[in-house]
Length: 406
Image (cartoon, rainbow, N blue to C red; front, side, top):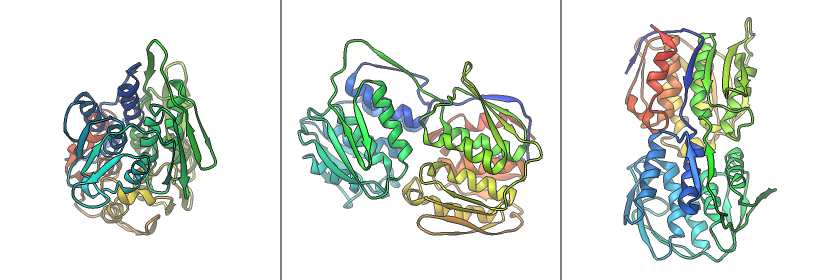
C-alpha cells in the first residue's frame, strides 16, 4: 500500500474497536462460566479466530493461524476439558513461537500434553484432565499471557490455583488486567509479591454484562500521528481508570512529545491535544517492561522527529509475531535512523536522511504496519502486506484516511 505524503486534518473523531486483550479474556470466561454478555467485542482477526475456536467445541483439530493469544489461552482451556483430546495448531510462524513454560506448568498440574513436531513449540496434542492440584510455579519473564492463560481457568478448578511467579515479572499490568476482570465477575483473587491466588468460583444466577473498553494499543498510532501532525484528534470509548497496560501511552506521549490527553468521563472520549511550543527532550530514556507492545510506535515517532532514544525492558519483543527488535533495526534504517539492539533494548545511534523510496517490510506483524504508517506525515512510503492489520485493527487504513489529507 502506497501512503502519499499527508497532512493531519485535525479535530476528527475515531471510534476504535474494543480491546483485543480484554475481549479475548472475556471469551474464555464466557465459554467456561456461561453467564457473561459482552458488548463492544473486538473485531480483530485474533478475537474472531478465538471466538470461532470456542464455538467449535467438538473439533478434534483447531487451527488458530497467527493468533498467539488464542494459542496460549486455548492451551489451558483444552487442558481442563475432561476426556477430550484436541490438536492445537497454527501458522508456520506460530510453530516457531515458544510455549514450553506454559506446557510445563500444565504438565505439573497433571495435564497430558504432547509436542507433535518440535519440543517446546506448537502444534500440541492436549488430553483434557480434571485438575485437582492447586499450586504451580511458572517463569514470569517471558510472556504474561502464559500466566493469564492459567489464571483464566483457575476459577474453574475445584481447589482454585496458586501461581508462584519465578523471576522478574514482565508486563505486570496485563496480569493485573486479568485479575481485575476476574474480580468484576466475582472470582476472588490476590496478588502479593510474586504469588497469585485464585479461589474456585461457582457463578450465581443471572447474567453479567461487560462493555469492552476500546484498545489503547490501537490508540497509540493516533498518538504518534498527533505528535507528528500537531493537531487535535478525538478517540471514543476510552476510560481514565483503564486497566490496560498500554494506557501508559498517554503519560509517555505527554512527557516526551507534548501530547496532553483530555478525558471526557460522560462521553467516554479522549482528546489528544498537542501542547503549543513544546520543547522536545534531548533524549528519551524509558523502561517499557510493562508496555512493550507500544515500543514500535514510540521508536518510529522518535525517529521521525530525530529525538535520540534508549528503550529497555523489551525482552518479549523477540518472541512476538516476528523478532520485533530485529524488525525495528532493519526498517528504521529506511527512515534514516541507525540503531543498536540487544535482547532487551533498542537505542538510536545516529540520524540521517530517509531513503528516497521507502518500502516497509511488515514481517507478518500487524504492529510493524501500523507503527510505521504515521511516517506518511513526513514522507511518502509504501507498507508491504498491508492486510496484516486485520490481526488486531481491521479498520486501521480507513481510520488513518479519515484524519489525514494528501
